[in-house]
Length: 112
Length: 112
Image (cartoon, chains in turn orange, cyan):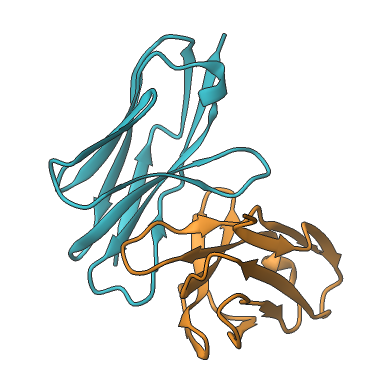
């Protein structure tokens, strides 16, 4: 049982490049979320989804896009990378409201 | 706005020396309070969910308690393998999806 799988684990980009961070879960969870983790700021919500075809913005959505075409996958797209987006990105999934979220092991992204 | 404050930021214990971590929160109606453990280079690992004041949960050397304003994670006779960063998060009643607001964490080091 893989749980939440994130790829790639590490990535270095140049300013202005675009890329997609992949997230897949095999637990048939409806709810999925993307967070970023920065020193001194904790985990902050970027975007989330409550089911296929339904997404919404979190606390820090600017510069990121998401889509949810299947229950299993929830990719995060950086449209034009900026140094301020250097961070560790975590994807999480949960069964429903009030149930614990299960996290992947993250993608460490550096933007030069 | 939901807020979570964890203290202390860092804690060093000797093996066997019991202590407590604090999580103070403000939220407009609590749906759930979550404790996670995070090891370096890994995603948060779920420990406990608490839903109402007075509730307690236990797992091995860890015990989580909840009041209307704060939660404590009590660590009894810790071992070096308990060294990690412990994260607290809250979910509000009116939150859509499974949005969590995280604290910055307490970094625990247990020396042998």
